[in-house]
Image 1 (cartoon, rainbow, N blue to C red):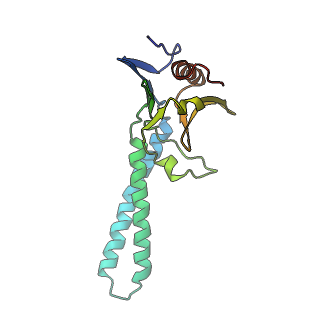
Image 2 (spheres, helix red, strand yellow; image 1 turned 180 degrees about the vertical axis):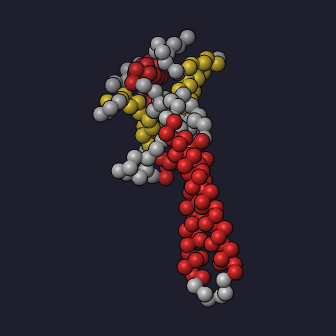
Image 3 (cartoon, rainbow, N blue to C red; image 1 turned 30 degrees about the vertical axis):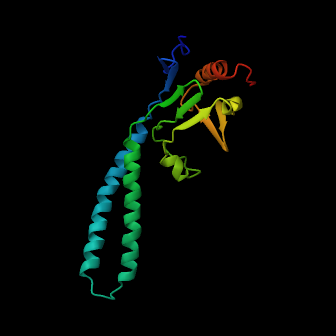
Length: 195
C-alpha cells in the first residue's frame, strides 16, 4: 500500500517489503547559530593563549609561590575550554532526520539529531538539551495503544508511552504532518485508538 505524506511535506516514506520507513528531516537552523559558533571559535583563540600563559607561569614559578590559586584557575579554565570545544562541535554538527520504521510487531523510533538551538536567556537548558543522545527505541503494538495526539499552547504533540517513558514522535514535523502520522499509525496498528 503506497502511503503519501501531506502536500508540500518534507517527510519521505519508503516501502521495503512489509516495512515502511518514514523519514522526517529537521528544519535548517538560522544563520545566527553559526555566528555564535564563529564567536566561540574566536574565544577559543584567546582561551588557548590564556591556557598556555598560565601553564608556562605555573611551570616556571618557584614551589609555594602562590601556586594553589593558579592551579585552581588553570583547572577551571581547562574545563571551560573543553565545554567550548564540545559546543563548537555541536553547533556545526549536521542534523540527522527522525526515522520511524513501521514493522509488523510495532515500530522502531530513531529521534535522529536535531540541529543546535540557541538557549533562551531566561533559562539555561539542561545538558541533555545542549548535547542530546541518539537512542533507538522499539515500541510494540501494545505500547502503541497509548498513542495520542495532544494539543499544546503553540502546537500539537504526538506521544506514545513506552514503559515509564513518554516519547514524543515527529518533533520536527508540522501540525499537519503530525496529524497525518497519527492517522497512519492508528490505522496500521490499532484502528480504534481514541484521540
